[in-house]
Image (cartoon, rainbow, N blue to C red; front, side, top):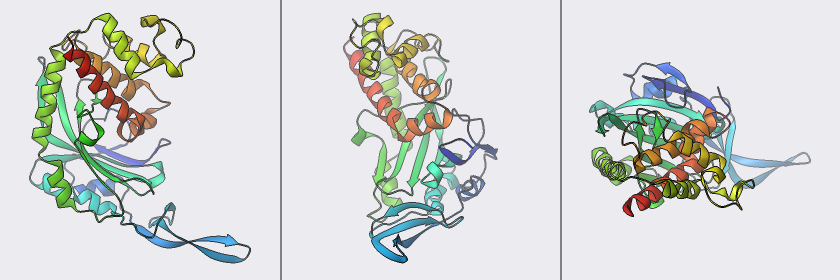
Length: 318
């Protein structure tokens, strides 16, 4: 398995990142957990340092994986871990009702980040065939300083781009729970709200972007905002143009007419946005598992939110 991805399984078609082993698409959440090799628990033990021939307590604890006694992280005295089975059972009600089906699950960073993705059985079509589906992502970190994160994420089917669902981090359709508090699944579900409502909100934004046309000057400015030239010494002091965009900005500019689904809402800010997500999900990074981590949990998650916010601002000015 790849560097970031320790174990992983997927149901149905090969996911956009191309990682994992295939499994049946009718699994219960716990069965998906088992197929993904995540049927282990974490335990808290006292942490010590060795000084000479003595073991000195550090005042902290270590989080240890049951399957191989691997120390995943050092934690404080107040820590409420969520076991993997409890995380996967979060989906059970949705799956039993037929509202969702398990799609993907895996372990990143040597077991420090366990995640599961379920497909919401509702989608919408834009511009005569551009289908967007909704998924619910549950990330369960076994690492100090990271919170449990449950969020809806849309995926554009034609190119398998993962999209940001809203504009601001605090407005992202997600719920974060720190390990200093007890995880309450019912409270999280209440805070998340109804999946269909979130998807319809996103549809309205997408249709607005698809109705607004860009011009080349604004498009260049947009790409420079999303992928600024400050890190590219070759062009950062030159007059802004297509030729002097940063490497990733130029890749997005080239992708706008070449990416899968380029025919839908051609020439619109919807296509401009998707050219950015195409670059982040399929072109950036050293390999597929780095792109997966960055897209869902790292820098490109923030970048896609900024790309949506900026695209809406440009479209609103048209």
